[in-house]
Image (cartoon, rainbow, N blue to C red; front, top):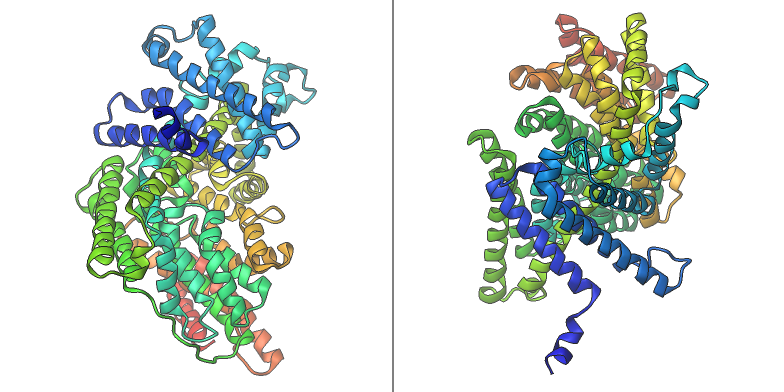
Length: 633
């Protein structure tokens, strides 16, 4: 019977895949046509994306470990029913809600909004517990702010009805607002590149190629992690994901050649951190930055590359300085890289160059540039697959299946998109409640008052606030919170918006490493079988000189404000200074210990002069001295 033949295919994984295909095709069509606009797209796809994320989470295990299996099945079915109901309601009533019923909603509108609000809150409790508790406190505070004994937190209070409508059916804020729309448009478009690379296992191929380039002696083995993470960081946009992909290979490799376990984990953590600031994904914060500033995304990319360049060059030097003291210079056997892996790596970098050409030269918009680049990458990967499997009879290609690669691509894209949608929808609730209570305006007023006394104090306070936020929030969440609260006061104090946004972006990246809750360090420490705290503080030591870059951009503003030769000049000055600080901290300049300490201290001071002294002859002279001392060291 037909039902008997179909029965083996009726399972959770295939249901997830079918919904993933529906969402993928819908998004591809939107990327090409832009039909309906981002708000209408969000109204239709938010329920589908949430359902996809629920199914992916359920594949990993029961959502409620303490409940029996049947209770888990029933609850998941209820969550799915909420998604279906919300989709149906917005499909039938979108025009009425978006245009005619703004401010005056029906009971059905409220029920649909309430159900999707409760669902997002519950899913955030499972996936992002810190954000859940923050939002729960904000809900109570929004309703009962008039009970606050402190004037700073007092407000007249808001009804529960207003909380639900502002977070859902008003569409301007909350779950269906700007952040959810960005997750399903620009961010989802660029995730096609990451999905295609993962579908054909190009990321693993890149790790093998980078090992071949860097792994020629024990002292250069740790550079494998730097090169691999910098490459994969172009499309991963996640420190923890970067560690999981590259660290599973690079950390055991380093340990095998005598690198201490904690240092091996720290190297991978530091290298993966850079992936958060590498275009085009930039931990999804780059897309938000472009939206906040009202500029094309390419304008953000061309500035962010300078930050990534300084980060990875300085990190490579810091790791090398530690390696030459800790490891012998014995040569090792050079690994052999299969031709298929070389071709996949070349296709990946060729695709990134194609994306830059489309956006930077032909001035394509973000959606079409990402879509065409994804098609370009996928077409080349398919051609390479057919060539190596059927013409070359390559054993590596024989292990692959085109259909499996296609399915993995679709599922990877759906999983990443739905995960980010849940995260950004949760943040949409948070920012919406901040807005309703007036907290953003009051916090901004305090920063302005501090700025009237000292702008340096305002910058330091913003950095501390970002550090504390980053200790509990993902980088994207930290960036959004800081962008809403901190940027406007800094702008009113005369700081260029580009500088303000990149400042908080670097704080958000640093938050991924913030002691004592670094998820990236936790993943690396687990792979290395090393102490979490020791791994984290080793990574902080390696990255500490680079964190000064967060403050350097206030002086070397051309680095993020003025693309061109002025940007190149300031970028080189910051690079020389960060490398000088790394050499002063980790290098050895003199054989005698006392003299070495004095010289390194002088080098550190000279490096800080290069970084923070206003432009002029003094900076150029000190820059030359620091450069010579760094090369000597």
